[in-house]
Image 1 (cartoon, helix red, strand yellow):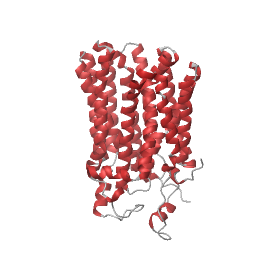
Image 2 (tube, helix red, strand yellow):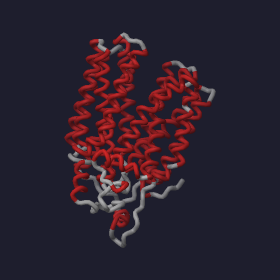
Image 3 (cartoon, rainbow, N blue to C red):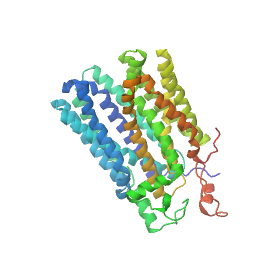
Image 4 (tube, rainbow, N blue to C red):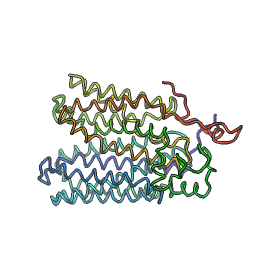
Length: 446
């Protein structure tokens, strides 16, 4: 067995840049969330009116997520990250100005820009992270998403501290915008140009020659190239990718539900104080961060199918205890299981989506699964509010429990596809034998 390839200086900068900017985006998101009450007070609006202002974030995020994959294939990941970073910084600046001037429309517009930047950058980051994984032959995406989770913890703590000393929210968000600008400039300079676009162009010029291709035809699932809108949709003809998409839907839904509802779930469902509800969410964020940073060795040893199956079951146990336990203390402790279980689902399924495909197809598949995951993350959890109006928030969380159970049943789709052997020393099978075994190559031990 060969050792994993050594990391050259350019690849090291590439990986470090992705880690840094994901940390910065996590800080920026948590900074906004932590100061939401202060912004509401500055605008002097009702909770219902604030909900309309917050809708700008959802609109912008979905727009960014939906167009990001296509933009990467046309312009490359670095260009899309640069655009996303610019919109994110502009959004923070506009939010800060809108809050300082007490203009609701300004905050709405700033949130739309901020959300669009987040959506554009995060899908592009997943494509870049998957490309780094293919270069290094070992997991990268869990730590990449772990950096985002760590950023949310740092941003939340800073936001709580600045709120306690009544630091002006406008100056707070403006300072975050400056920090994100610095991180974005360094990131764009360190990320190589053309990831996604260069791969697609190479395949278009030389179809069927890429090693590891499942079809050897230069075409995506269903016999169509993966470029353009039809090609983007064609990747979903692959049954394995559909199953992976269902897994990421469930795991993203579980994560997003905690982000949207966990504090209120503890306050309304278990009668805790608002402070205890916020601390419970902090506990969830810490568990998510821990799981993502610690998950790499588990993936290498046991493989993604076994790890995600165990993760879904652990998260399901945590959610079940939060729903059905009559003890607020036990429910709060169970949030650790919820966070640890949900931590690896999203990054690992995204990584698995590109396994066994040519680089250009891998970028299209990663983009498709990322889009599905972020759609579930952004759109799914708010829908629980409508259900909660009829059955209560704790009972509405049964939907999360059912989805996690379903995901655990189909994790075999995460096992790396094994192309047929083409002969000794040739073809995709030989390529697989000649590279270091990653988590995707390990046997499924569960």
